[in-house]
Image 1: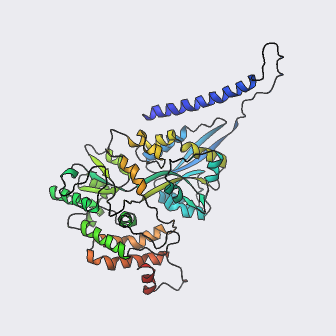
Image 2: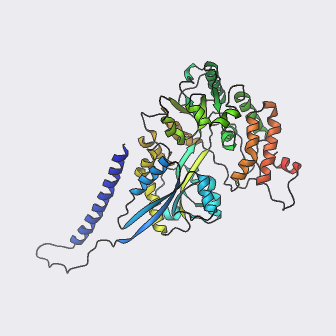
Image 3: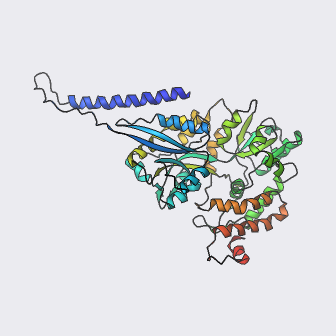
Amino acid sequence: MHQGERRSQIRTSLAALALLSAGCLVAACDSHSSGATSPSPPPTSTSVPTQLPSETLTFGVVGSADEVDQYREMASLYAPLNRQVTVRIQSWPDDAAMMAAFRQGTRVPDVLLASRRDLSWLTDHRQVQPVDGLLDDRGFDFGDEYPRSSLTALSSDSRLQCLPYGIAPSVIFYNKALVKLGQVSNDPPVPGEGWSLEQFAAAARWAVRHHPGIAGVHIDANLAGVAPFIYSGGGDLFDDDTAPTTLTFSDEGNQKTLARTVRLLGQPGMSLTPAQLAQRPALDWFRQGKLALLEGSRGIVPELRTQLGFDFDVMPMPNLGTPATVGGLTGLCVSQHARDVGTAADFLVYASTPDALGMVASGGYLQPANQTVALSDAFQQPGRLPNHAAVFTFSVKSMVYPPLLQQWDQLDQAVDPLIEQLLRGLPREVRRTTRHIDRASYRVLGPKLGPSLSPSPSDATQAGG
């Protein structure tokens, strides 16, 4: 549906609701009349609801200018019947910038879109309040529209802290001019369906062999990049899902998974070099036809669509035994210090309606956590690239959520250089490098022994090295 038509439909629905409410009020007044012979009722005061004072609601979002415009359009149509509410958008380019502002004392907006990655900080610093009671008071029906895992992922202390809004599982994008899945010999993968790690690697090798000078595949050399491979291989990232003290890369099963991955993807010419990545991001190499396969999520689709003549599609993450992926999860949260909690909760419910969600999703950036909207044309966008957009939706079932942490930034800084060393190394080096990764993670996550003490190498090894 065209955005103009969608906005018109929402306005029409709201107008009809207002007329219906007014009609019910009139009918209620007339229901006591019993005919011409009955005396007229005494004059009464009007039964039209009292109009509450006008109000301004702040709504915090992150994203590019085009993404923010989608939220602004949606928010501009918020029109409760008994109050004039002006929604003022506060925006940041990314989650890191938003959280930096909050840490420096910026007031949290009345309603905000927050990444699950930042949920621990927001709850521990009492910046948001649980939304389950607010939703119950408004008769919000979850039905089967929200994956249970997404609700659990945004919960803590047995309370739903934020309502799932956007979800972004990692998938594999491929350049259809460079990768011909049907021509990959020996068990070729089927477009849109799952594939094994071996089929994935074979597609990358085929592209490199038939198009000299390109790179086969790019997997981000960080925790999020390698996590799908570990989970799919039957392993886990952490020693505990509630209170982790270390990563578990050096577990025997994880070592086998990582050695298998490095062996297949670490062959000459398969990956972009550090020099190439220093020159420009992997996404740019992909857009320019110099990279065959790229790990990514729905948020990059609008940018890929702007590349003239660029034909691309998506596949699930490779399967090493069990379908698995990771990705971002964004929740709609209500500030602990909202100016009017009732209005904030009302807006949260409105922003989660299919029409409001569909308007935002039609911009191509947001993958709705609401599965009804995610399966609708507003998100699937038939006739537009990628051809198999359902891969995004069905990959949600395979998402694995790591523990809630406050130390994500410190953990990334500690282990990402080592993960890059792992992916660019040799299979025989996996055992030693994974031990280094676990020890580095223990220094961030492990028990603090005091200002002058640190865990010994043997302690770190026992904890997961």
